[in-house]
Length: 172
Image (cartoon, rainbow, N blue to C red; front, side, top):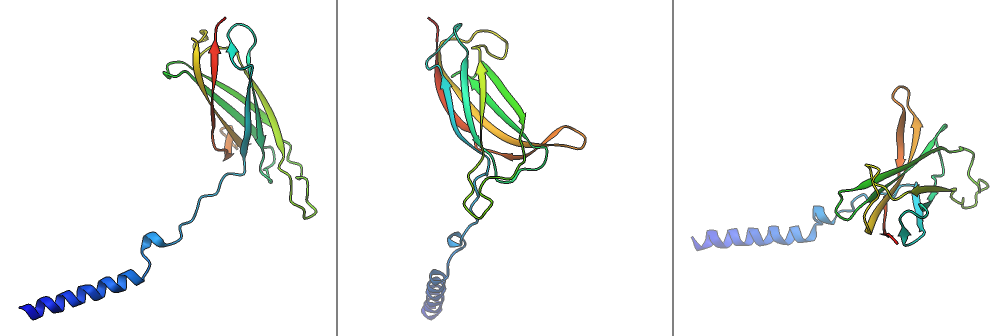
């Protein structure tokens, strides 16, 4: 009986030693996701703080386009503005055609990404066209490259990561 326990113990020690030498499935290289070529570089809100009933809030969004674009591409920039309680929101959209000319630097040099500035304005109203209350509001901006579909309108080809931020709304 003691001999069978000793043999079993030696076998388990040998298995444990060989399993420590071999890499586990967790130690293998995992493919890392790549970041999209379409990027939102900056979002600037003016005026800050935003006073209701004076001038609209203007968002200036700078987008870096991918190196290659399909023919007839559209750039769609969407901004979602939400209240802290998420009870009021407003969706701002801008869709424009993008020229598909060759990027600068085709002679072998590192090409400079093409930048487009998109301006969106918000009048301080929510989705029901009522003036919003004072407070801090969140915004979330996303850019998409779309192409014309054969039947059902534009189809998305690339999307940027979302850019988030906050701004203050006040009444005088």
